[in-house]
Image 1 (cartoon, one colour):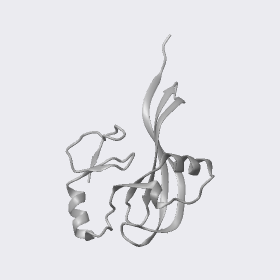
Image 2 (image 1 turned 120 degrees about the horizontal axis):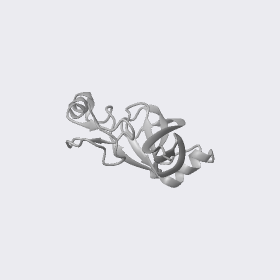
Image 3 (image 1 turned 135 degrees about the vertical axis):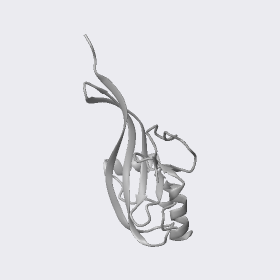
Image 4 (image 1 turned 180 degrees about the vertical axis):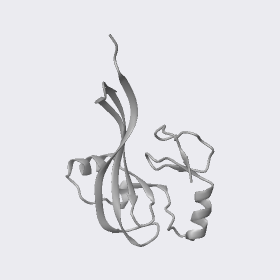
Length: 138
C-alpha cells in the first residue's frame, strides 16, 4: 500500500477593495487582497492548511503590505470591507514611490522577488525567507 501526499504553498486571491489613496505614491488605486498558506495534500486533495498570512498589494504602484491577521480573517469571511492604515505593515515599496522611476528601476535590477508572496530582497537568496518558494530575479 502506498500514499501520494505533498506539501506546497498556495496563494488565493480574496478580492479587491477601493478606491483608496496610496500611502506610498499618493495616487488612487485599489487594494488587491490575497492569502498565502501551506497545504498538505493526500491523493491531490487538500487535507490540512496552516500558516495563513494575508497580504495587500496596491494596483497603482504595486507596493506590498502584510495585513493584520484579524483584519484578514474578517475580509475572508466577508465581514469587513474597509482596511485601516494601522492594519497594514509595509513589506515592499512600489515602483511609483518617492524615489522616482529611475531609482525604482535601479533597485529592481539588483533584487530578487518571490512570485508567491511578493517578498522582495537584494540579498542573493535562492529561496524566499517568508514562504520558502524559489525567488526570481528582476
